[in-house]
Image (cartoon, rainbow, N blue to C red; front, side):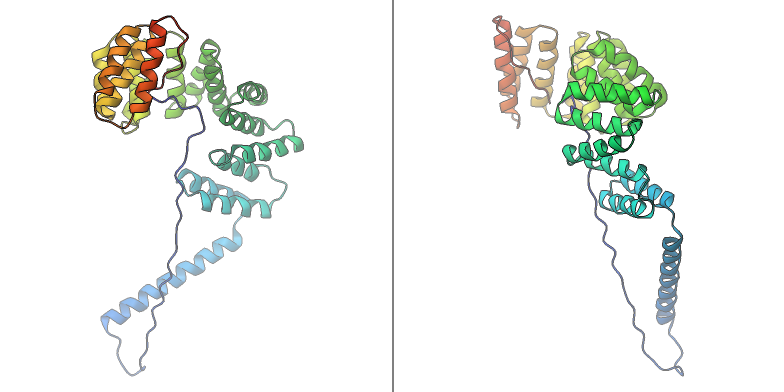
Amino acid sequence: MRMDRGVCQRIFARWATIAIVIACSGCASFKSSPLEKARADSLEKRQMAGRLEETKEATATPEDKLAAGDRFHREGREAEAMQAYLAAIRMDPDSAQPKERIGFVQLGNDPERAEAIFARLIEEDESNGTAWRGVGLAQLSRGDLDASHRSLVRSLELAPDSAGARYALASTLGLMGRPQEALPHAVRARELRPHDTLVANVLGMSYLLSGQPGKAEKVFRQVVQLMPQDATYSNNLGLALGVQGRHPEAYEVFLSVGGEQSARNNLGYTYFLVGQYDKAIVEYERALGTPGDDDFTVLRNLNAAIDAAAGDSPAAPAAD
């Protein structure tokens, strides 16, 4: 299973508007056919809709543009979201909110640019907790965990009830190898945002890394029910089962979202995590003997398990 260490990538969608112009010719003395009348009615409706949109556009407020940008962003229509946020800035250049939104859009594409946007906002107002959260997320995306930790702590000082800041701080602390410190932040983030699968996933990982795989299993099962098509959550559930020694169940979960090679590799990973290196080696060898596209990853994991079994310092294994 791949433990996501970056900001979630979003799918960008572009919309194209096609204008169809229907030209009608004839003489007033001729009676319109039903088809011509239907076309004329359709054209009139489109023209009315167009005029209505023009009216809405003319009376739109910065708040309207911000709301439209948020809607586009949720729908993955990033180009249109950016246009809406830029329009909000033109209407109200002093507002920080559309600039913050642009920074968050940039996080998944260009973390350095996003960090620069948030840094400028902090220069303008050091009490902007959202900007501190954005900087922390950008630093997290770049792998600068210490800087991310400092920024996110500052964000929480300014906005203690920010689920986003607590979720991000829990992620950073988990990656820093401090799951016990991450856990209360993850718990609070889940309380603030109970239906967010990303927040729940971080809570599950925090439980798992804190030595509470049973609680992690419960959380991951809830997430899988919400997002059964996402292999990451199912694989994390399999990991929680494997760490509890329930390897047949773990294998079935892995197999339900991937091929046999991937499932064997993931099962080997669960053995590796609990120090059962001989069993990990067996599973990695089985994975290599199974058709699949992950031979390089499996071979690297096999070598890590062999090194660990021999008492050497193993390279970090990778799961699917």
